[in-house]
Length: 80
Image (cartoon, rainbow, N blue to C red; front, side, top):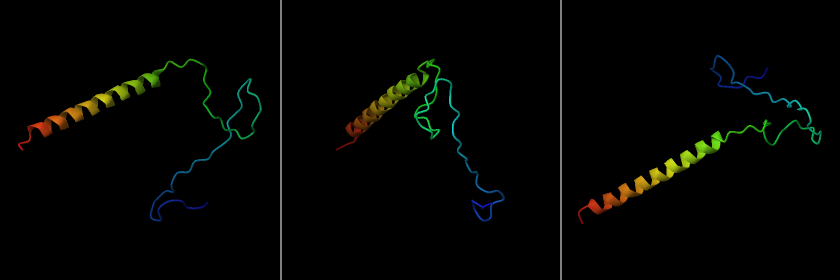
């Protein structure tokens, strides 16, 4: 076995072994690579990640506006 990691480490660096994905029922055998472009889903997506992304976008925009307001207020309050 080849040692991968720092020479003075007690254990080697973890390695990942990739294996082909098992074919699902009803899947056509077009490609034999075992890779899928999208994860298999049962169609029950509840939109949770979309909601979280929208909340993050709104909070980011509010943070940007607050930063710009503070910058503008700071420039106005400086003596000339």
